[in-house]
Length: 425
Image (cartoon, rainbow, N blue to C red):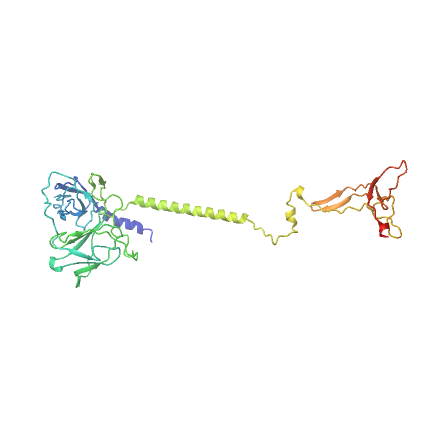
């Protein structure tokens, strides 16, 4: 897109925006009372208003006395004044237009008619009915983006037939009429694909040369199709207006609670820019927060997996000295040293018998130099062992042991049991 295209589009839209207008009720709508609508802005007179019954009749016997009303301004006047021939506690919808097209001023929400002492404008015993009627196929329903056939009895109409779509609190539009076809069981009609979103409340108004609403009206709620088809929807699809509906302030229930509007300058297609910008910013921040949370938990799970070192009990390396070096000082292993024998030999007789007597320890072959032992932690010195003289006495068949001469220091004596060699002989 060229850099000057946006500015050019805005300049092209300025004349269109300047042609918009707003409107409001000058009085509270009341039973059989005079109602004036004042228009402000740059609309194209003459102006007109279409009043449609909304909701059920307030009479217990179900008598409908409300007619579809259409009133116009006089010349270039910016006011429309008419008598509201509706009973108290009933509701209606107003759609205001100028010469640029139907519904160019927007549509009100369902307004409540308040009570008054005047009831001369209607007869509760005389119901009203349209001059001719139209039908829908599928019967009595409108489905989003699904072909709907609107048909009627051609012998009942006069002149050109047209249909209007009115959305309370939103946009009103002319229903496009396609090629007329005749179906044996239905009569004359055309096919229309509603580009309306499901859940939208829609008034369909039929007219011929006898006036707007001469064919009556119906109020279906747009349903959703089974295939969830939304191929016909786009930004220009008629819908309810964001924000306050057109018409200013007026009661919408029997308690007198009102809707505060003020209309919209673009003919009912008002866009709440602040709400859109706030929603977009909130969505962006929400997405960023979600991404940060996911990254945090992902990093945390990776940290846990890196700290967990698997232990293989089957393939453990017993000779791994790196693990031993990590042990505390008091738990370091030391080699086991086999002690030197105390007695290196003994004297026996020629026949193998041990001789009794004193046997002194032979001199140790080990030098007095301290033993040097290598350990896992280094080399350490071991002090020389001190040996004590030991006498070994071998008893001959439980005989007395040899007596030491006086004055000789008594040494440690180890007594062994007799060998009993004489018995074996």
